[in-house]
Length: 306
Ligand SMILES: CC(=O)CC(=O)SCCNC(=O)CCNC(=O)[C@H](O)C(C)(C)COP(=O)(O)OP(=O)(O)OC[C@H]1O[C@@H](n2cnc3c(N)ncnc32)[C@H](O)[C@@H]1OP(=O)(O)O
Ligand SMILES: NC(=O)C1=CN([C@@H]2O[C@H](COP(=O)(O)OP(=O)(O)OC[C@H]3O[C@@H](n4cnc5c(N)ncnc54)[C@H](O)[C@@H]3O)[C@@H](O)[C@H]2O)C=CC1
Image (tube, rainbow, N blue to C red; front, top):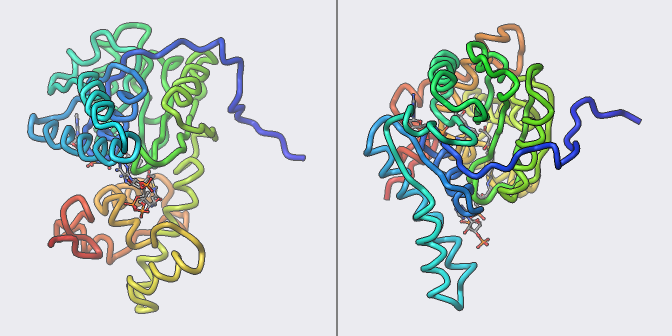
């Protein structure tokens, strides 16, 4: 029988309790992470570059919360209103990173998928955050070890990879690097549980578990369109009805964001140029070049504008 090299279960009493959470980047993922953290009684601060992005983030959270409350408090309007306000009151926003990390237990970075930008950000945070603060990245594809390259507190660094939409998807991939202490790793596993997620762990390997399998599949679907093998609609219908996936691969590319998908492939191609399943899709590059990033911009492979 195979034995697991990355233990996903340790002594849960080893970890510390996370009470305050700083989410950097309030886009698709950051807003979902902030929402789930606030819904599970954590105090949350979201940081983004401009107030308008923070306003957009709060809008995403409010829309999602309303969907949840509609079901959860179907017969209890007052309870629903209280839940909505309580969650909202646990979330603050700022454009000042240094302020946002002053007294936080954990930083979850969910900014653009670019190695240099993430490295620069963590170098800055490492200098200003309190000693006990754990630093994590929600990267889809970049090595956590590389992201943490310029950080002194290697023992308090790890990967927390959430899935889109965060309030719905139950999985959290928890990644440790060689310097991550047992206490930090256990704290991250406990935190995942506190967020209501099921945790899995793997080596700091490209795409971790899910994206290592998912992204090559998504890219091959785009290449099928390029080759004229099938239409986007038929590819999506085929994978939904023939393989039981909730979304077809082309719909899912639009849902993840075509810009983010391109960053993932570009990053992998740079780091692993000879890996055949990490080759770019010309069609994906062309659509991104036209400024169509998928659902979030109203157009991608499909058009979402009404
Ligand atoms: C790129 C990376 O690094 C990693 C990734 O994230 S890869 C992407 C991973 N995500 C996926 O693969 C998503 C695949 N798609 C799905 O699972 C589903 O299509 C979906 C959950 C997104 C939507 O489900 P659906 O059945 O098509 O639509 P819909 O009926 O609107 O939603 C289903 C439920 O989720 C809820 N929901 C959907 N989105 C929501 C959101 N943002 N917030 C709150 N609730 C939401 C709905 O209210 C609904 O709840 P009930 O069934 O209890 O009524
Ligand atoms: N979209 C997806 O399905 C998933 C994405 N991820 C990862 O999460 C991260 C974020 O992705 P998305 O939320 O989809 O992107 P997004 O484009 O929706 O949001 C990114 C946000 O970060 C902000 N930002 C960029 N640089 C910043 C900086 N230096 N400081 C503060 N804020 C900054 C942007 O203004 C934007 O609001 C990426 O690393 C991505 O690979 C992980 C899981 C799933």
